Length: 346
Image (cartoon, rainbow, N blue to C red; front, side):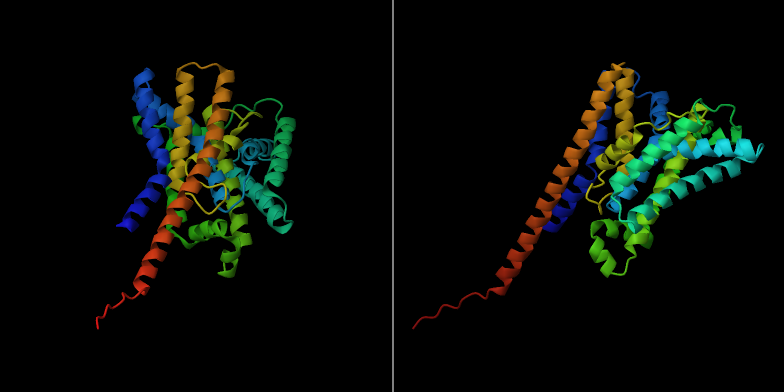
């Protein structure tokens, strides 16, 4: 029975984000007019599509025990460079090829980050921060003004709508999350990623190529960031040098709120989705109440601090639960090993 109780406690702890979402939805439905309307719910998911891919990208890198601050600039750099290159060298090129080039650029950025960190043993925080500054500087230099008049095929993913007026971007985001749920929990590759972040040395001894796993996580992060750039470009109908600004921090907050540990080796894709939904509901709540823009910044900063505190608290609670279970098992084992004494009378 104690084992069942322990599992239940851990399940609640891992899915605490969804309890918070239910609570926030309940509060908003009471105090915010038109919050639960179909149009507003669709709007919440639509505006969370790009952030959702960034949270997933950041979460995967965090799971292997690293961090990627370059994703916000990759979001702008990948589509921006693609449009500039294709416009100058290959005018009239197929939108499908443009999308492929965008994803390849994201992949190359992720590969470079991963190689520098693993081959040169660079600190991931400092390396990706440097990459973020470099990429943003290039974007500001190469795209001083927004690029408009984009191919409808390129903007389709972020702009088009389907049945029930549901944006294609929402379906793409949810589809990608479903794919990664399968990868992380049903494939050996996903289990290797989690094991690498959980215990690097033990994973290496077990035969996992931890260097490759970490590099793969950065490649995935770069591709997802580029995908987020495609969705953002489609939603805005243009490429601007401000796209993705300050979203790296929000992606970290979303991943942590969703149960990903800053220490690595812990986190689920379903939890990350919860983190995205919570951030989006929170942002929608502030906008509907017309909160002052400076107070919005303060509130989001507080939310990030809350996410970090919650990560620490959850980690301590998890350790406490597991230690109690370990102590109980040890006590039971000792009691069973002690043979009862036999009383005799003379």
